[in-house]
Length: 303
Image (cartoon, helix red, strand yellow):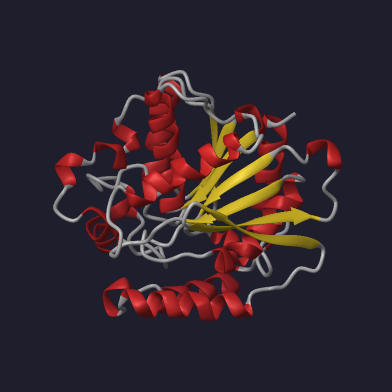
């Protein structure tokens, strides 16, 4: 398997560390930087992009040109990360295109409402709305897979739990990239052991993410800690996490608890990688290999 040199990784991590200081930026700066970055990401000519509106929520379909008509009724519903305060279809298009190509399945990404303008449970409600919209528009639950990264992975888990508790149909599976599985307690061991290794995440950053979304309502938001909720009855889950990130123990502990609850969970830990390293698939062979694995999982769920 092709790997990035340690020298290249060190240079990338140094740049990421400088760019991911939440405490030194306003929300407006974060959003502006994300918009600027979106302009510089690779453009793909072999996909079709279709902008849509779901209620008052913007979204877009990403369809690979190789999509065969027989699986037009299958879909990946993708929930983006961004700490609940940022994230857009534009910024996530390159990643969604790569996932669509790897899986052969079209991807619907949605722009749920962002904090601090819209506090908990706004994002949670919008994710439920997007899934129900698919069901109302002819998609079967068995033909849908959830995806999400960082807090988007958290939202995917929270959506699954809410659907199960409501007695609603569940999708066939979910893939999660560096998900926060406990945004209430933030007590994973890797917050300490990976603190110096992680170039993008930290305990302080994640406390800020939690507080900007839920504020003083910690005791009222148990669903923001899927790790500590009943996990029985959830569909198959595929998790990817970097060995150098503070969310490593969030992912390993969730995997253990979910398996104990009877859920089929596959966990991949990527050496020397950080949170959602997939963004750099245009330059990191490990990222493209990880996306290939996502495609494998999706195809297995939708066969």
